[in-house]
Length: 89
Image 1 (cartoon, helix red, strand yellow):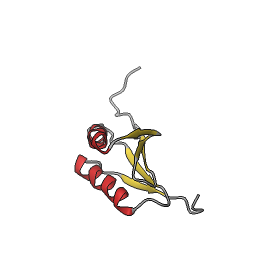
Image 2: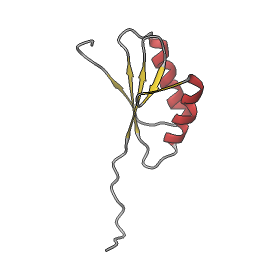
Image 3: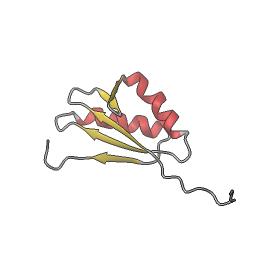
């Protein structure tokens, strides 16, 4: 049975981790800084657009996280969140 009602699709979540030495991991797979922007652009083009969750290692320099956030914004990603570990583990 078909309907004219739009389906309420829940956007997926993309996980981007930044290691202590500034390496990027896209859903557990290491990516280079050059690979990061095209991936972000592809996600930004999806409808509904996924949520981007950035998690930085507790020892990472802030500039690496800021670079990832700036790349996401340039790519057109609208929903950016940060994942923190309050226990510092």
